[in-house]
Amino acid sequence: MSTKILLSTLFSVGLLIFSSCGTKVAPVSERIAKIYTASSVKENGTEVFSKAGTSNTKPGYGSYKMDLSKPPTVTIRDVDGGTYTGTYSVTATTLTISELTPQPTGTGGGLSFAITSLSDTGTDLILTANQTYPKTGNTTNIYTLVSSN
Image (cartoon, rainbow, N blue to C red):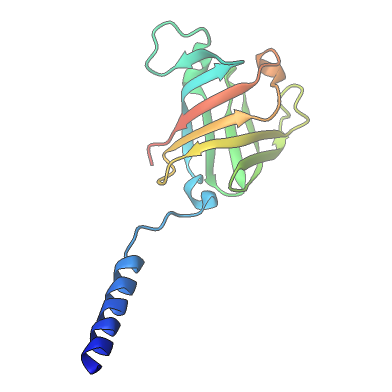
């Protein structure tokens, strides 16, 4: 009987140690706190920019940058080269940007994105705009962003 108890205890301890060694994924708020650049951008479902592309219809996205590295501050360098600073908050599925100054045309100083995809390391991020963007002709945009850090 004591052998069964000993083996059962050893098995339980081993299982506990094994299960606690798994890699834990950081929360979205930590993974998203990086500086991102555009890898590709779609406006109304049409790809208008690809970092690897040679015939981009909107080459201005080549300088697009979203800096989320200093929460809750965000700085965006937009497709037209304008720079906007504000604050952001994040949930598991939404990135909300507010108090942008100067206010991008037609936004009221705020933007909202669905977090379509975020890698475990946070280096790859796909954002789908929750509203149309007046600066791009009232298109709904999908941003595939990458971070080198």
